[in-house]
Image 1 (spheres, rainbow, N blue to C red):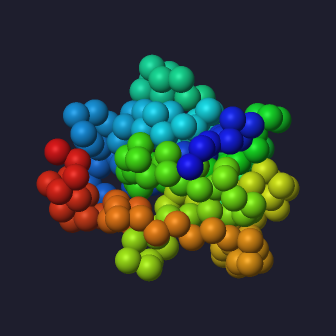
Image 2: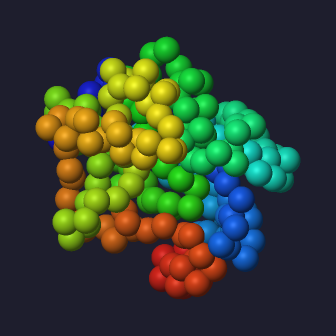
Length: 203
């Protein structure tokens, strides 16, 4: 499947939360011989993303030096306490004018380059507004949105289900990509989840 060279992908990597259920600051947790934040940025670029925007908030002064060592940029979300939707909106408002596809991923959702690459290829080769991965029939992340939905993504609110409002609205124009990758459903919300996942995939 050939990638469309006209597809310019911007990834929004949200990393603004409190990490309240984790014994440690999520972005700086160890993963594959580096930190989660550096690993995520690296695999996004290696997977075919053209631009990575990291949305920071809580403890931003700890994470920005790591971001500055990469080709990613960052934006500070001063409203991160109000929920993840505020970080997505902040990122959407910073994407480049030439962006044709917007990928959204959390820093606590480590994904390898294969997942990123395959998702981009499927999204750019077919006429869908939304593309997301699935494992054993269960949907995962990251999610890619066509830039035509940029304005709608920029108005989402946590109190009205965040991006789910957009994904539900465009179900008929959504591409579900089945993958043999259990990682597409991984979320590192608690210390126990991180420990188990690290021993299996992150060490």
